Length: 326
Image (cartoon, rainbow, N blue to C red; front, side, top):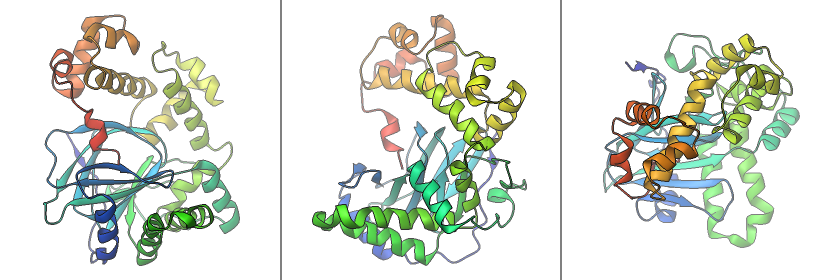
């Protein structure tokens, strides 16, 4: 059962018309649009989504100028729109769909992927962000403080300064001759606005050497690189420089799942990509991502996606993850 975790939305929505015009011009049709600037993406949808799309969302910020979206992390449900932006402080297997969009006012979203070195430099130069303002996302639990990582996903209020920074970054797309000189500064300003937001401390923890958050990140990086291999918690804990019990605790605090559940999500999402985008046979797809038992693969795949892998294998269409990457 989903637990409502969206942040309270009592403040008036900011004026996003200028940003919407820029996003719409550079994303003239539905789809995920890469830009000439590395790490910057635009997503446009002209109608609410149907089935949930599943993806491993990279560490990034997502800023909506029109429409609204729901994102599911385990049993937690996050809803955001033009008044709130979403931040992923680590790579998270999530599902989501657009819940508000029309052809006249399409869903428009800017996504900027984080550069960990850039985040670390900004934290070092600007000092520690302010402490979180209150319960994380309105769910009644404490936000990250000290060395407690909190969730690797949070919502925070959009400010006019953030919108201005996003608009300046988008305007650079019309001036490729300025990219080399100005794009890094424009991106840094947008990340700086995230760090200075009411939940910015949670992103800052990613940059702190040898924090519990940083150690969990080591475990996540290992899982992403070796998801098809058998998982031994003791070995993963050693990789993260943590005890097994500490890894379990902090990993679940950050991702809302255990390392084994995280690995399963990675396996099944890659298997679905192989089935739909590359047309692999079901047995080969399951084996490729680490399943020795075809029946176990089919059972776990059906549990996550609500349909057996054989049915998805027949679709042979673009992966649904491509509709979710912002």
